[in-house]
Image (cartoon, rainbow, N blue to C red; front, side, top):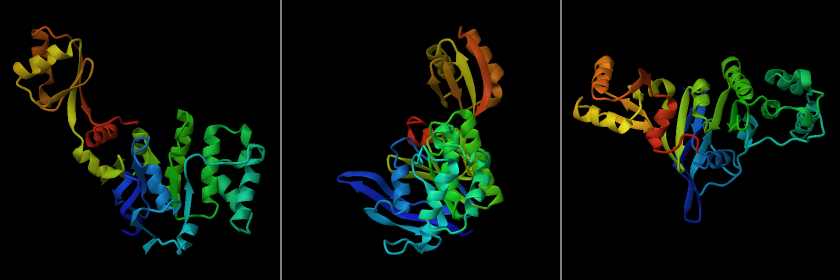
Length: 306
């Protein structure tokens, strides 16, 4: 499959600190690539290097099959991007803001504005001032601006930051539509794992500046484990019974009163009976499967949301 973006041992160091450390990632044509990591993991720094906004300390970037150099900038015409929050003129209308961007980019055809607004669902509010828009609408307008020149690759840095559930759903639907009907390749960085899981077909997980895993979501299903989740009144006593009486080794206490068991999954009734006989109050016992968040935590050993 055709590769749109690759990085090779991409590194950015500030004195002795490596904000990004030897990151090698691959984005294929048509991917929705979820770039996952805690806040401060190195996502934005990586994206800035890919777009040529900051110079790598070492390593290389390849876009559309060509190595990126300081002199070669033709590839930028094929990329749309939003880095952090999109900036606009608050007292101008939606259309006026896009008109300024169209002019600065040297695009003669004004129809691109209507096309972009239609694409992101903002055609009906094109005369509304920016300071009258919701945060979700402003994010969609940022995407509209990034789409004006009809890019092949769209790179979005935390596009759902600060949005309410309705706004997040709007952005999710838009990205799926762009990938599905326009065959656009999309890289979306985020620390909200549950959202990325709903849209991405491939993910890269970055932790403390290093890419710890790059994998297709269908492959994650083979890594994820089923488990029995128990909710008990006394988890310490329950753990003692599981070890000493039930002879279990593969379990862990994940929260106060919550235990996950990774073996003897077909013996939930027997486990429940033995716990109760030993005086452990069990309020719930059910079969579960690890989520992308669980997978992330196993890889990084940290908090999912930073």
